[in-house]
Length: 177
Image 1: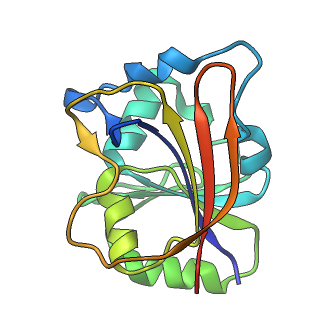
Image 2: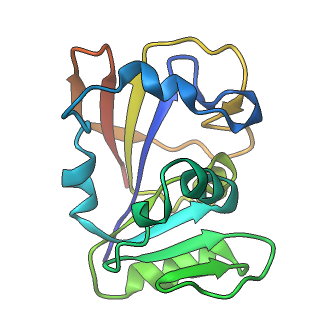
């Protein structure tokens, strides 16, 4: 069965964005030639789940090619129906049903790229199998929290912990079953 992985960056105090969906704090750890394992990770996936706000930000700041490389199915989770664009599908249905259907299909693994609402819905249904969380050495004090209240307790097992000379620390956990 395919696994669903979260690969995301957060501030030390647990925010994935500053107020107004500002991700500029990620620039603190940008370094020429360093992708923190992202290319290796994305080589293991063929499906991406992403919230509409995160998708819109990536489209605006990075461009359409970040997701639409022709090799992956991308499900943008939204409340507003929109037509598909290539392999990008705008999904308005039940997230739990979608993930269960995707996990049962043959293929590479599934990547959740945020945002917080999507992540927390997945956590409520205990659907995330692996967590790769990069901690940026900054205390933001306010913004969008990675983990919200109201989800069940889940026990994790440490796979690896890596440190980088930028100060970023990357924690890789898998869910204990």
